[in-house]
Length: 384
Image (cartoon, rainbow, N blue to C red; front, side):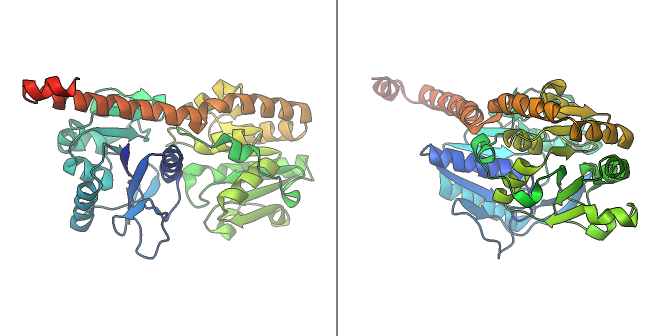
């Protein structure tokens, strides 16, 4: 099958949607499909052979984050050229309502279109206001996927229609077989995310940290991600700042090793999450997970059976839970075992098969419509 996938966010600034699209594309290629991904990217960005650049992206604030989007005449022209050259059996557009490549491609595409909705934002005034503009594009979509029940709810409440829920996928074995790193072991807490994006929750963790470090004198926090490191620890007592180690941006391999090494992975995100791919990666690595009780996180963690939950934005609750977990090896082992079993439902072997089933449904439907519109004699010959 010839599959075109559209990424709305800049390829050179990693994020959950980009990782999902990358891993989906590589999974489909391994299965023998012909895949091309259209994505915003700077001209000097090294790209995998299956990615086509749609031009430079610009930063736009949205949903408590900063998204790098591509929208304009150049991007529209590149999208049309990519569609023309690709002659795809199906086009899979991610975030078709964002003012980026997804919407541009949806306007231009013909034939079967599958759309995946990632956003969870129950009070999106912008989406409601833009509905008249979005409606012609949305009507062209053959099938809709939401990555979680909360993304599906946002779609239904703001745009109407419905979607099948297929979660983000992860290569579980990649994380499970990673080698722990000795220097990252030994009563360590882990955090991975953009340091200077408040909704990722690092300020909440920093507020909880003095109590954690006082109660557990041997504990450390390892932080991976880009941002202002000095500002991140400014609220900590000076004597505790050395117990926070910043690793900067890490490779996929080091991310897996970090998750395999820490005693507890902490996800203190405060909102705007529709799924929580980092939780699935942590579970895959066998890390005991402690996360804020966002609805999407609770769903990923099986309502607390596969990981501990604490009250969102409550630094004291985070500290209590972290102290208890660091002091209870048996509970950590129990969470690791439950998480490792639970996470198998998110492996690409399952998620990829579900997405392919959607592709096959829309392409079979398009073929049936095309056949029905042919002259009877030709239609009869095609059925032989």
